[in-house]
Length: 423
Image 1 (tube, one colour):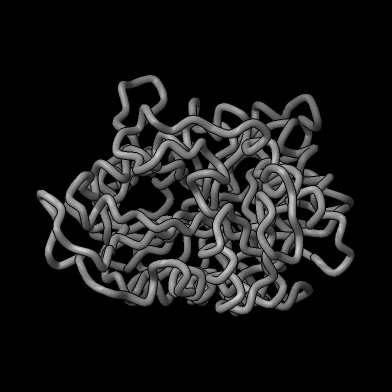
Image 2 (cartoon, rainbow, N blue to C red):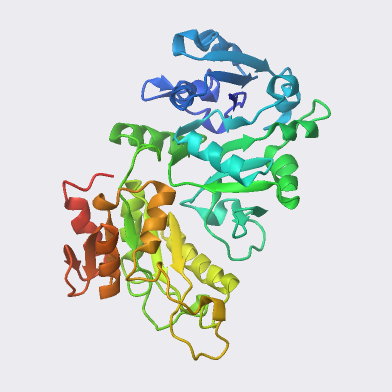
């Protein structure tokens, strides 16, 4: 399996830090960014690495050589003139033919379970899969819109009118099948997002792999400083290692309880909720909403409507610098007799709290250690779902729980003080 690292950028936004080195060679806590990437690739089983170089590329070649000193095989693809973010693939058509390959930016600090990512890519069967993650600033980011099967439907730039969608952005890691190479008929400057990924999305051949794993580009001085800080704290491990999470009920825990929510306009954040979630984001703790949504079974909201409600929730959190890892919801309701009800959803299930199905599904998707995680909510059914899943519990109110607080922020503050909660 080959990995192609785009390491030829000039890094003009980083000139204030160092103008004499190519951006991937900037030392991050004493080690070049690119070396940290190669270490992760080696750990994940990628021993055949192609470095695409251009600006000041000799510094990269002199440092890494053939890769033997780093336990990998490194070859080079040198651009004689700038070929953009994808044009070098035309130079590599013969080298990459016949198998899937990983394409990634050369300025990423990351730790990702790439075998899990690759398995997902092959399961979906598209030509390409892009890793997406929440952005702390979605208002000025290109968002990735997907359908229920995680097929990418559109890229939504910030300077256009955008429909409600989840807070997802391209993290800079992509798996491609070799079929993509047929699209590079000539050697020319090519923009990956505009000329490759966008047409693939229009053809239904692009999927998104959403992950809470740590990925941060070092493209600006601010993000570079954040990367330095995170390395000193210790980066969270990839999904190969079980990790604790915080599960949250929605209504009455994050947003004000107003009965059945059927419109985005009804979503109003509770005081301190965004701050609580941001504290977890800053520690890279997965934050997963698990919520019963009988409005679907009752016929009061359809899937698109619920998507708009959750997009509103995510947008309000993002305005305050917070984000959710994911939202899991139960669409069922066992009782009948409602006008417009959806018969197929009117049944008992294993996902409607107090059943633990939503938590178990999230744990399977994100390799969560349930015994080290917390379920936080404002109802007895939340507490029971958490216990049945094997989690510890935290209640907003006076219910029986391991931790009790007056708000989500109270609960989170108490959890983060626990020495046995390690994220």
